[in-house]
Amino acid sequence: TIFLASDAGPGYEPAKLLSLVPQGAHGEYFLDRYHCLQKIEHTLGRHNELAMRAIKAVRHHDQAELTIILDTYESQNLTEKQADDLMRLRKYLQRNWRYILSPQMRGFKDIHLIGSVESSHRAFTYRMKKQGKSWTKQGAKAMIGLIEARMNGELQASLNTILEQLTVLPRVAQTSLLQEMHIRTGEFLRKAPTKPSIGAVQGIIPINTATSRPMGQLFKALTH
Image (cartoon, rainbow, N blue to C red; front, side, top):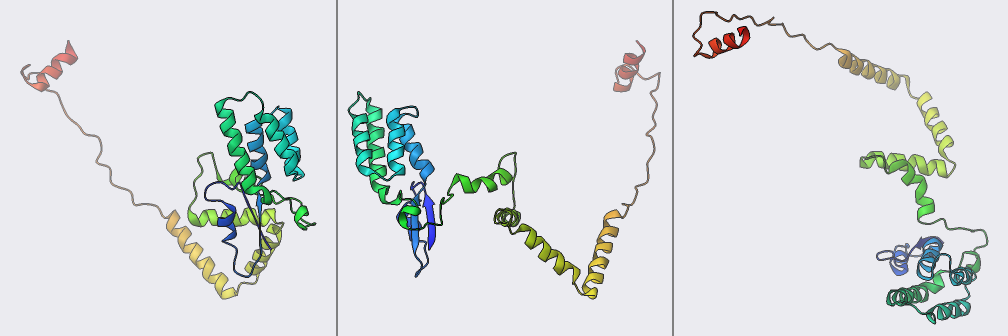
């Protein structure tokens, strides 16, 4: 079974993600709980009691209770924008209601959290984004591999395997490697040829030059 999750936004709709599942494999799509509850808070108000009740109804997958809560909110004196936001929330929840079911509700007892979107990306983004960081494609892949190995608890084993491989390199390969390193080091430390100095440039300012000439004007400026 392949588990997929997103906020069901444009480009990340359930149908599009499920279409990526290889033929013969079973895909299970989950609506990202964080974004779903965030939409409810944003629409009904973070400190609104109805928002808290609506979130509880979503967690228990109680559509009847959720409908009552949204109807209660709609009966209030809403602005045009609030009414539009509520309509969009209703459509969003109705469209994705079957994907709100948790793994346990679907029979996957050993899976507690999907850990989708921000929670899983954070380990990568904290290391690879901001502070003016930039990566080559090869460097980014290498760093992602290291972070992934660390998150999966496989980093130490991978490092040990690499060290073991280095210790059993054939002696010929080691000698060749050392020679190459020696050559490169020598080229790096080689002094650049020095250029001969031409010395200081000498010159004189004649004292009897006509003041109409540039040198005469310079002499006049320096002596008066």
